[in-house]
Length: 116
Length: 114
Image: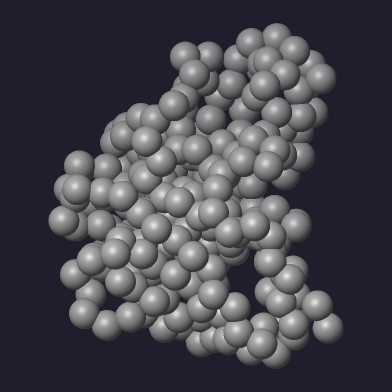
């Protein structure tokens, strides 16, 4: 079963506007971590932001913030003031800590294109 | 800051050949992970090593093997290559300090099997 669900179709965003990327997850592990990665067309996988299951506050990292709603099992990424360089595929990923491993399970990704 | 280094960046092989991918983790990171990302797909976990011991195994074909060496670099060995092995292969590394264990990815090795 898919642990991470990203269902939004490709998105076009106006430069300087904010964009929200949806991510829902499925786990019975009480201890888990949620990650967002950016993959530009060049292919590298760039870490953006992390949210732990026990974190009381939503994570923020520069223009990136994570809207963590634990009861709804969602971890949406918000990118503020979009820039042309934000055009990329964005992956949500989860690591379940209690199973003794650190593998990441990824969603299918959200494609974002920023237009001037 | 130093990042994960992968070599080669691009590799072209024929079917049934072998390939070796190398990964040099971020200094002081002791855990290495390998992921495979097919065209238009999300990355899939293959295998990981902690302190030179295999720590987790995912959907890695029996034709593939990997190890981590005393200097913490890792190699992924792929034999009897098939067309379906064409993919972007990522290595990631992490440090167990703190609770995040964030995995930092290398630039990837793009393998094309002809």
